[in-house]
Amino acid sequence: MKKGEKEMMKLPNLADMTDVEAIHWYTSEVLRLSREGKLNSEYGRALLDWKKQLNARLEQSRKEWW
Image (cartoon, one colour):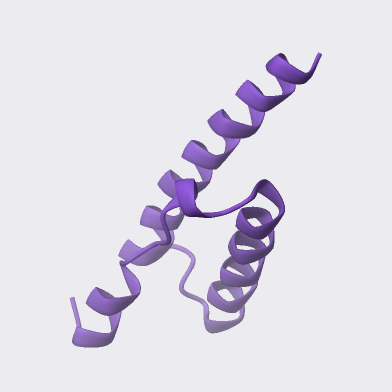
């Protein structure tokens, strides 16, 4: 892993973000990686794991709301 990639692996803490902030940040990152052709990079895979955590949180919020 290159130095820049290692620094990018620091994903934001979901607990410090609202749902809207997290969705916006994730969407921006996916767009950037897609344009760079790096969705299947180590960072891209870490981002996918981060998104799964976000999805679980959103699903829990939906259950509590309804």
